[in-house]
Amino acid sequence: MSAGRTLVVDDEPQIRRVMRTTLIAEGYEVTEARSGEEAIEKVRAARFDLVLLDMNMPGMGRIEACRAIRSGSDAAIIVLTVRNAEKDKVQALDAGADDYVTKPFSTPELLARIRAALRRMPSTTESVPQRLRLDHGLIDFEARHVSIRGEEVRLTPKEFELLRYLVAHANKAVTHRELLQAVWGPDYSDEVEYLRVFVNQLRKKIENEPGKPKYLLTEPWVGYRFQLI
Image (cartoon, rainbow, N blue to C red; front, side):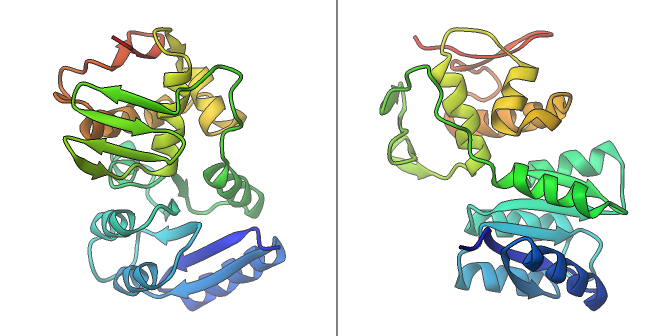
């Protein structure tokens, strides 16, 4: 049984070869692409569980490639880059990436990041409504479908898991650490920047006025709260 279908996007044949060998040994099915343009074509033609995207390739803009892949796929996206600037990390997450790994990285580190990206949050003991009606939309947790002002809104798997966890603890302040460990896993408890980016993206998708949120509220220095009116 496959651990997941993975698309490795890198312009260097040696790196693709190493990644392919490593991932196949772990049970993943692997497809390769040499450019962002080729990756977009392959994502449109087939379904993938994970995309490993090198951000230092020639061709179309790296952020644009990430955004285009995200717009056409619900696959987890891990960005690989030699850059370590906070701005680059935030840009990648803003473009739809689920995680960010800086080269050089170890094989165990990359595999751990892949497992975290593919991780699905276990069912919480708190009750989650099958459907949640907002003033201007509907969230169907059973069908994993969001409709805002009558139009379907696509959430990434991590965005959906984050929203589901907050709704499961509605009207309560949930700490950064709890959210990170629940949605990404225990190794991510200090990655507060992830939450800031993902909550901002969720606000843009489900709030009527993202700059003045009614549902996804910030608890200063603590975490976030989903306010049910």
